[in-house]
Length: 67
Image 1: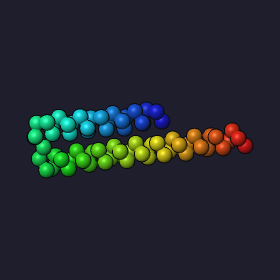
Image 2: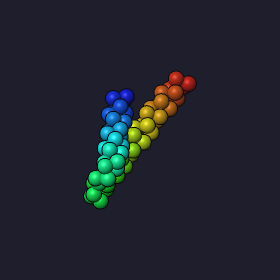
Image 3: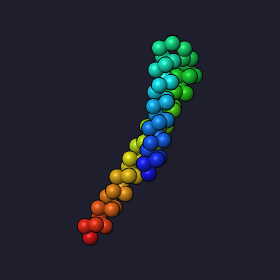
Image 4: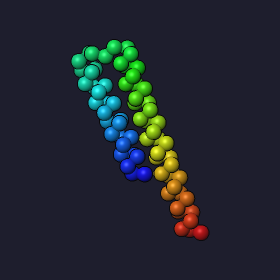
């Protein structure tokens, strides 16, 4: 699980770094802006999904221990 979170976080870092680098250079075309935005949205969604799954697992584990 941790490996998946780590991978999603790395994807997010790369997308943000690419956006910031290109923004500084004013080198982004509208298509590139849309591409970066899409990558950020996907990375955010992946992180949110993994966090939810992790919380559900922790909740299930807690329920088993208290039963």
